[in-house]
Length: 428
Image 1 (cartoon, rainbow, N blue to C red):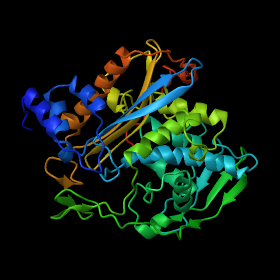
Image 2: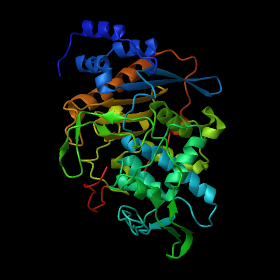
Image 3: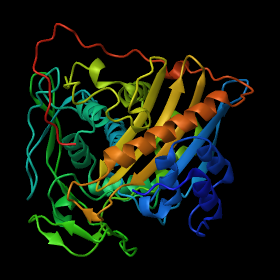
């Protein structure tokens, strides 16, 4: 990667014309110019190549601690596709809890044992879960695994529980018409993804207390906007195909919608009523805990922290852990795209903000070859971005300092005498 001198980088950045469909605020651009190394600014300059999008959400409180939010954008717009990867696990967790509450089934909640049959081609049965304290699967355990280290099977199980039709209808009704979640993270075709399994909830004695029959989605989707990335890709037969990879029928979440989803669960009263998820008070506490808890604090699942270290899914703080800071976030990575949506709370300095960003690193423009510049470009860029925004927000003037007690949680602790084998191999 050729690095240009910083003065030239700034000059080019200021001269770059933003298309009518993309939004860049001079205020955020100035903040980004204030820090970072030459690599950081090279990525900003070549924002089209790296498909960079950034949203900084400034949060201010009034005298009664009521928050107000203002988004600032860099190269952000619905027309610039990024592959959302595991960030889709955030809305699936919210929809799963909402569905449980809507069911009003006696004895069924997020901790109730859930089992899956294989009801259609491509599906896999699930009857036990060795990562949980009970040895049995539950929606709560799926959410833990999806948030702590971004487990893919946990996402698939929530997808199967909510169902493709309900996922998309619900999100569209909440005011997110461009979100499209139509694929599981397993080799299934479009027809197979439309089908969901027969599901049972069991009581403590193993008796079925609720059965959800298999479902099929007959709704159509708008795939009129064609999305092609790269100049080639490796297909399912490990052969190189010399044409762009087609993402037209893949999952889609516009970056601003992703930011709004996290805001809606952390600050539900800050969004219109129709965008709020119907959750119970203990659902919110549960979500806050596992959006911000570290793998090293968690006994079930017991992850190997040499692999799944504390900042494993904290891209903006990947190189460090600050005791007084907690990051409530969901990250995703695949096909060269690195994405993170985060709320940052610093309890010592009493600051808070949100940052949402995505960057695409794929120098050879071949997708699915596992040759991406995550470590040399993507992660360094996002880390520096997080530090720049943090330093700005730390020093800016506030009329009223926030009371952050709503996010001051009691976290779990792993027993140092626990001799169970640690989990090392996870599909995520």
